Image (cartoon, helix red, strand yellow):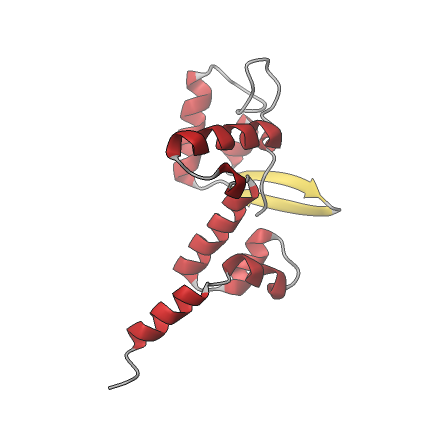
Length: 143
């Protein structure tokens, strides 16, 4: 998985449960889980979108990375979050950390992210010194 350009989230892809993207000479499949399928199809129906892109601007063009970036920066201000620290790519890192936190399988995560090397994937799940210290404290090795 990578930060999927929203033009690939079409009604047709959602019905299939998979968006297929060709990026950097590779064919990538992005799976759309059933719960998300239901929500996206409901959203499309409410917006009267029967085919094609689900996420479109008011002018009818597909929502772009720039649109997402701008909206994220606006949300930062209302949430009192430093906008200099927030980017669309952060969502990819968040997904990787949550997936790894649940599955603890770096090889599966590398496959999902489309990495050919697990070393690339490690960048997404690096823990901070604080996290390492807390884990060591929780081990209670000193009795």
